[in-house]
Length: 271
Image (cartoon, rainbow, N blue to C red; front, side):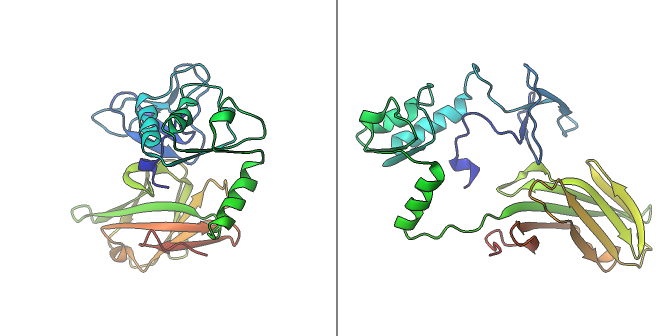
């Protein structure tokens, strides 16, 4: 689902936000700081800002983000059907969102093991596990449930400095839904020139310098955090001149098969 269509009322464990310029940074690890001020100890990448980064988690007792809450109520004002799964519907203002749908005389479906305060307002109450409800719904709609695929976007840039006779190669992760948002994807990146290992970087920024006189092949190994048992992925270039000035592509990983696919088409999902 495109994040633009999603209202995350309680934040995102993988999202940091700059306190100063509001820039967003996705991480492939939990950003929860366990601090009351939400500061993570990292700084904004923008040189003109360098503001403190904070996690986006909403702890118990804290106010929900106004923009996300407004987006959720806007969805409720337009919805013909509201499906609630696994919520007790006892905590406001989140519980007021499905209530608004029911108040508009639209269909409210509640899936919860226990009775909720909106039981009598619901068009249908289903006392079952969420997985069971969704499996049944997809069967009724005759829509097969596809295998879950891990989506990644990678940006590789190569800047040629003819005066110094070298090229600077930078490798970054990007949000697959928004290329403007940086995404910390790699635990480490290794570069090999020919059969000789050149460098092993274990933190961002992942920047390598290669002599323009190099005629050997270049292999860049991307190592991920392994939350889904991802295997490394190798980028292969005939030589430094073969590296594009800018290359942006998608990597799709099927955890059931343990396979990556590289593509420039975001819809070219492996099956």
